[in-house]
Image (spheres, rainbow, N blue to C red):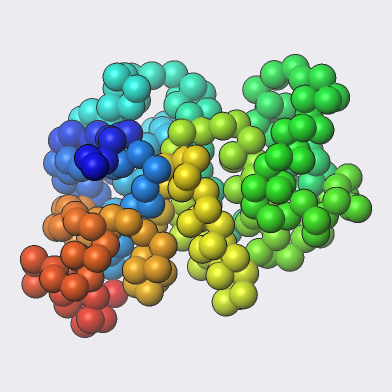
Length: 253
């Protein structure tokens, strides 16, 4: 069965001042699959996924050229607020809104966008999304406490619930477990495996073992260039490029 494409990048170039970070990159991402973006520090991984929901608009020093096709539209020419509703992002460090309760954090996308909901709709959204991330039973008795009281792993799952509440089609994860302990990391990895049934996931990871465990496809970046993009099984067993092979064998990182 052929995989359905959800995002197509063509000739993407991203630079800051005169420094090119992403160089003429073209790639397709597939629906209901997990794609890992790997490569040594400074190779452009985070820059790439931040471009997918227009985070670079917040810093005018970034220049982005090319095409990112999603739902037959070029995301680079679409209202960024609409883009971010369809393509949600979870960052490296858990960042629940400190002045909001757990309940309000899940609803933050609606609150900040001025979307009015009934009490029943709010309760339903909160319950469904806390259950999706396996947090409901852990916080049900303290749902109106601040999210900052939770452990690091719980905070990260809350951030994922907050993003899922807006019903995005694509979920971007920027090293979502790098600040977490091994137990919390395992929970997030299990969650990623469960979530790909309803959302397409693109994740940056420095953790080679993690990429091999959770991703269906892996892209290897080096100095802003896409060196190799294949099924994770193929890229880990028969990499075509020597630089990929050396990275996977930890000759550099």
